[in-house]
Image (cartoon, rainbow over all chains, first blue to last red; front, side, top):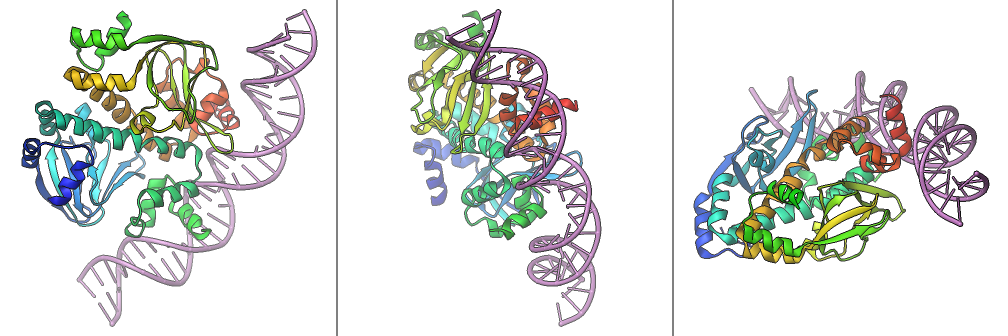
Length: 189
Length: 189
DNA sequence: CATTTTTCATAGCATTTGTTATTGTTTTGA
DNA sequence: TCAAAACAATAACAAATGCTATGAAAAATG
């Protein structure tokens, strides 16, 4: 709970009252390795805060190829914001790569709360600014310009200590290359 | 001005009072072809609404390679949100590809206004949700998974009617390929 | 602990894309 | 209008990456 407060503080200061209302929304959940937090085609409604463990969010192409978009280890927020904002089924699945513990809240209830509490609206704004605007921008260039080796080095920086917890094919899928190519890159480093 | 109201309505309803305060922030500007709206390394402070013309936003690598991140034709908002949010110099330049007319406002003054007007805060939230969360998500997969030809087809859909206004090397730079490769793709289509 | 399954490295070949150069065309600007 | 510059198509070769297969190592499982 102290961890949680610290994490929340990243996005601004919340009043005791707001914090209390927010805390009431939280529900703990557990996921076995391989369990889904969200399946493709499913309507999304929850946001999860990862307390312990690891999720991946990925797309499955019509040919069955898996394309990993992001990893969500401890302290990360996950959920399909695009699906919830458009009220449409999720294009992506979110699944536990390890046994995972979360705290979850209903996104729409959260959004209602932002209308009641201005500090929570500011919190939501700050959350989007940090994770969807500031952090994503470098990737827009990297995928156009950098080769796979450079992107692998970037991955190692972006997710420090995560590499030993992942399979080669998971990292390769995140980088947009084949496991063969990642093996070659590692061999020459 | 009617166009402007219609555009603003995309992001929610603003009260007359808010609209008035907002309109007071707007200043018209003109850019010759090739003129900068924002240079790399410069502190950003304005958002521009493109009334007529076309901007590109791009990164220049240490080797001098130009990587175009986005195009901004009529009715688009442009500006470096990441630079303004982090109060740091812009990594990207924004430059007119055609003679361009804009309406501009100071982002920080706008942000102050969102604290005064709740409907404007909701407007800002909706703007981020649409342009930074919902619209960007498909690209995160496309760059990992699709080949250049598929990305070119996606580009044609994303920016209908823009293709004849752009040079081959500009489109190629947006796609993350060389003009040679784009020429090959076009030849086989 | 033995067996089955998964993972990884590597090889050989195919495909995509990049690099450089050439040529003809189009655009620009004096 | 004319010369210079920019642009586009194309060719030949190089580099990066994908595809398929194979065997060894590691991990999971009974």
